[in-house]
Image 1: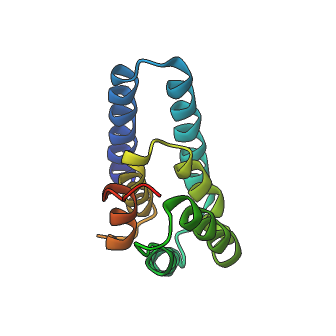
Image 2 (image 1 turned 45 degrees about the horizontal axis):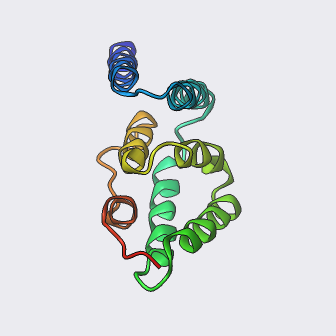
Length: 137
């Protein structure tokens, strides 16, 4: 267990180090550092019970609101409202991830699920919401 936690911590540190090296704007780096620290503290305080069902519910929420005919900003507001209402235990971490750059959010969700012992979690709806291009409205 300790070895597993050490490897996760090491992976988080190396990812953060690469992010710090690749980022040029100081405010963006500061935001990422604060987000990473907050996530690390949140993970230590959360129990692992029921996490798998939380992430499956999160995927269902994204699947419901990530329709192509709904503008991305409207969908994001509706998704945030649903997460706050239906997944209060995950809401704070969701908000922290939502403050990160769009291109890294899906991977952040996957990393968060993995760190909470939700094995091999993935969600096509979330991946497509953040990684697939959408026409401007």
